[in-house]
Length: 227
Ligand code: SF4
Picture 1 (cartoon, rainbow, N blue to C red):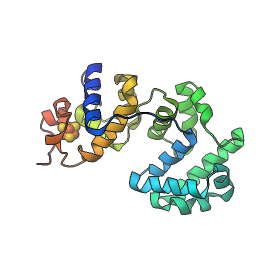
Picture 2: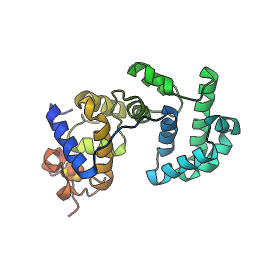
Picture 3: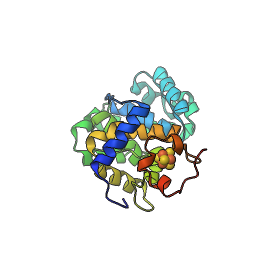
Picture 4: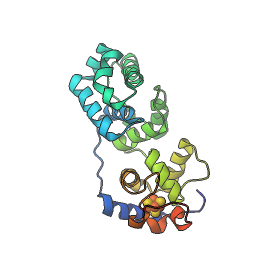
């Protein structure tokens, strides 16, 4: 982080974004569902990944049915999410590994682990990276993680919250260490929404941005705004 940011800055940004995009409340779900849902969301939009997850659950209401049907059968219902052969192989490999290790197709036990242990455990599944791990641990277990997707990364970079040339891991650690833990869930979701609706990759709508006064890129004239 280029300069020291105060907790009250994050609190103010959280308040302003919540005013624009709404307050968010965490509802824990089965972590395996969140993991699979997040794998489906990789490299696509919610518009594609949410219906794909719903179709997958409608086809296989019990994950054991998906395990027994095999990766090819998982491909069909998730096709809308794209990269179906890769994603179905990953989902099936996770189900297989859980079945072999625990005989139980659930990840509820990770919420009883220490955060570092749970992080390492989820990282042991193929195709599961820092963003996905942080989402599962924060959303379902309430663990201290700050998921950094493409929107959070862009918004945080423009605000001046990230160091020079951060890797995804570095971005996660920097934001987790700087942001007060009680803000993680709502601030993450509202930064995603802000990135989608206002702080676009090109020509962000800075003139209607509720947090422009906190934005380093805007202050320094580094963004070409939408007039
Ligand atoms: S001022 Fe512009 S660049 Fe900065 S956060 Fe707002 S929309 Fe994004």
